[in-house]
Length: 108
Figure: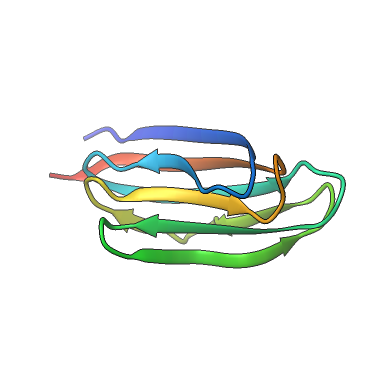
């Protein structure tokens, strides 16, 4: 069975959490990159809400000016299920770009 790879982006995220991806089945997040697009260091968080709980993948991580942070890369994967939501947030207005790579529908 062929796999469907998807990417989701969000740019200029600030101090309000932004939805980057909502699972529509059992999906696998295979990459998350967070980039500082501001003129000063920021801290960033990425978390999944499962409908009840916020589960942090990274919390208040510093990202220097002009840098990015690979939250998930290489062999790591995070399995999410239908209606799980991935959020990102920064401590600074309009400062964070994010890109997420997902394998859609890994099982039925």
